Image (tube, rainbow, N blue to C red; front, side, top):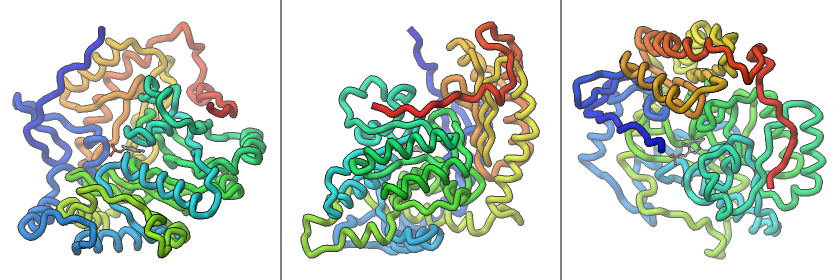
Length: 432
Ligand SMILES: *Cc1c(COP(=O)(O)O)cnc(C)c1O
């Protein structure tokens, strides 16, 4: 039986460093699931939380409001494309996706098309750990496989990559679109799946087709939001304006739990009615927590200020250039399936690795004071966007040093072909 290694005991964090109870300092290659985008303990965010703490920590959002929540909502709206003008708060990414799905289902009820009850998600998708979001995760490769029989059934499709696949999807939509409420997408990068990537062109083509069949477009930018892929939102790169958008992870700079679902004016207006039963019923207890909203406002200040003389998008480009230069040479090694790089995300997927080898590789990086945590056969880094060059260099050089012995193993099961040829072959198949 394989058990997970004992968790490391972290007693404090600073910048891109984790300080362990035994005195060790680890450079964090993951930024706590990419939340700590400005580095840990950023003084501006800490000060905002402390100041808020001294005046108002939390009030219920039923019939009450506070300045941090209204200011944050307005600032987010100002940053969003198109008419994404209405913000619903929640406490976690999973719940933000739940709210988006709930709005979509209720919208179709209100529009007199109650049979639109299903969603399309993409192969390898991850949208959260609550029951409904689990039903949108990939039923075969996702982490919630065991619970599949208990979940509502949706359609999990591969990203169409060729004109033929797009036409096949069109034929399928022609028959089924009237039962489908919307499509849920992690734009450009599917994080939890091991940094699987799509091109902006593929994304654009898929959304354009879905629009033709009136599907609502729901962008789950919980991973990609706030410059992780180089732009504020990943869907900006495909010039897509979704109907619903979810943000969380980096929203408070990795300090406090908070998420938002942002809806278009068209959707909002469909809910306006004198009948109270037609309102959106969602108001969990800690919705719009004031400390979390203060942290998020402070985080937005930092994005506005930039890092020294650089904007965040320039800084992410700088990180991307470093990743391309250092990691790309690994792509030609025999046991490497693919090297995927986008913005401040780099992933090296190995072809064959035993479980003990995966653990050993992580352990060797840790002995060199680098904290990484693979997803399956994928070794990745998503550092703080503010990481200093010397620390970034230590992360990449340490990863490369320890990956090379495994990456160089010739692999009898797989013919040594170039990594480009080895990308997944996808055919259009629809689940269930
Ligand atoms: C992390 C994540 C979620 C879930 O967010 P939680 O805050 O963990 O509930 C949903 N979608 C994507 C793309 C994520 O990366």
